[in-house]
Length: 173
Image 1: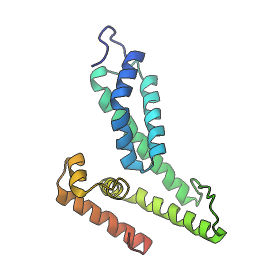
Image 2: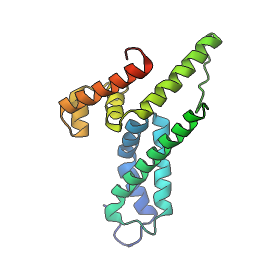
Image 3: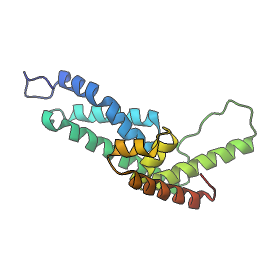
Image 4: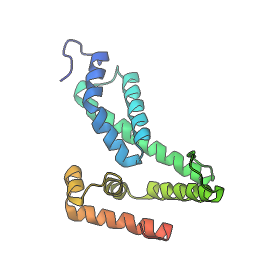
């Protein structure tokens, strides 16, 4: 799979690993954070960290290292969001170029902020199932196959996600 001439992890190895794992890693991160751009940024950061640690990287365990780094980035991201929300700061503001009232824009931003905060508090499995179903429009059987768990487990996770969202938002999702 990787270059066999050198025992050290080199640029050629990184390129091969990047080509092999970029998309699966991006999908892994996307289902955790729910934003494509953020997931892609995290993938890039993951590969930068692997390159910085290249002297310690073993080719036979690089996949595990990639997913460990990526998962740690997700944990750090959500911990950061918790701090931000605790202090009442907004993480990002979308520019709306449509003609809408300032009140609507304010309410939309507040709802999005609250919704994203609630999503970040969902158990990881429930969040992944919810995003796969509602964002990717995957059926429960497709999600079960991807996650390698039963359809019943998917139903339970989705039910939990919807119950939490319904309770916190006070409306049906």
